[in-house]
Length: 88
Image (cartoon, rainbow, N blue to C red; front, side, top):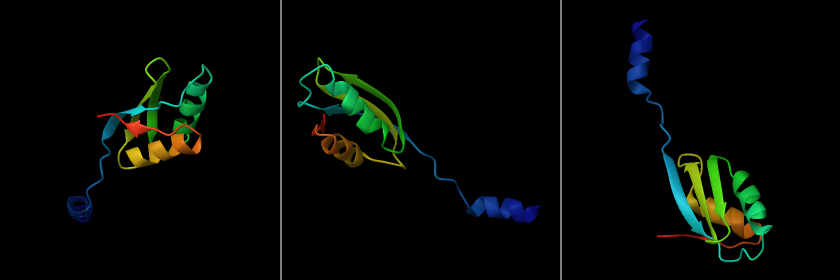
């Protein structure tokens, strides 16, 4: 039993932090575009929530920052034909 306690002291789990980013997606020009953008983002491992706003030309994405990052998200939209960038 003491071995388990000793091992637990040296092995600490990596805790994922949930991050939210707003991506500017200016290339969305029709009502079908948000569907494509949302689908592309949903395929990125670690993404937990997506809200695409056509009127604002943006996507709000919540993701696990241990699994993915903003660069992977923007790459996913670009690969789908909709270049994006993180809003400040």
